[in-house]
Image 1 (cartoon, rainbow, N blue to C red):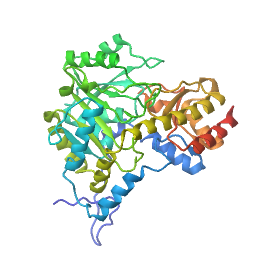
Image 2 (cartoon, rainbow, N blue to C red; image 1 turned 120 degrees about the vertical axis):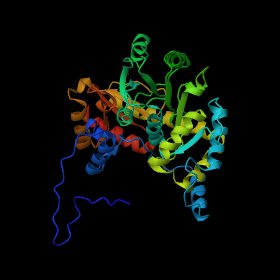
Image 3 (spheres, rainbow, N blue to C red; image 1 turned 135 degrees about the vertical axis):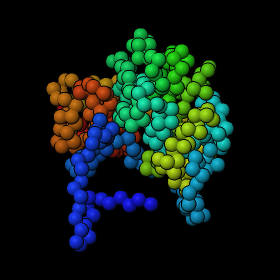
Image 4 (cartoon, one colour; image 1 turned 180 degrees about the vertical axis):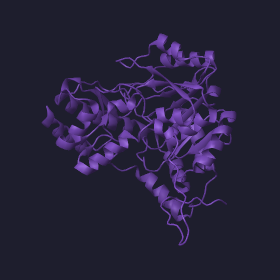
Length: 400
């Protein structure tokens, strides 16, 4: 087995060291580190209220903690089956059939991953040949751009309108013979848009016409407001076999640090995803998979109460942002408010740094959600305790 010697390793006495060659160009040179995680570090540095990174500051359900502790105490601490513990895959299959209207064999259609972040990259790497194109609606969750680059794809960005609607002609133009996949995120991060069945049917028709795969991130599927309904594009006619549906336990069950997600797909696609997943991470944490299986057995009332809680939180933050002079609308789903900061006279990066340093509130610069543009936007999360949001709103009043 080859031994890799770091440039930091001291040479043995009496030997000389070959100079390290300059690094050649890498795919990593085409994107920066996560701006969201950078804002969390700045938040810690300045003692700010962190409304940048979308993690709750309140506990997950007691049932999940008990199940995780029970699994650890039962010594379920070694590798699970690479593509997921059988119990979790069975519970996922049951839940997806009931909620999303799709049927997947737990043995051949479900892959458990290290969060939906890994699921997205594994899916892209599984289906993309270098040079093929992936349609990415923008604004988009910041990982999608780098994910397409890492998979060897050429991203084709298509803009959602100012009201986050679909311009059908622009979407038709974005698809071509080179299109291999389209990335969808509904409910959407950062905008809070919930794609309608009509919009998803239009995208589905484009996929069928161009023989493209839909890779859909549905991590916020249970966080919906104002009677909005979640629709999985894979449940539409002719789409289940050409869709990879991604999800995670992070947001629905308030366990963002557990890193357990999943990919649902046709067996042929699943086989490819599983091979990539195996060599990316081997597998998700075994005891936490048992706890996630327990999460899927929570009563339906849990999901209603979750949405009601976040509805209250979005209204607290929305009122505070409006009072402080931000231009914004109530999101339809997820737990972010995407604001316009044009009237403040600063770029997104300047204003985000100004907020965290002087007002003590961290937000995410809008440009991190666009391949170009977004300098007039900031994203705030309301995945926090009511009192945390109230304190943030109090601090925001100092900039009005």
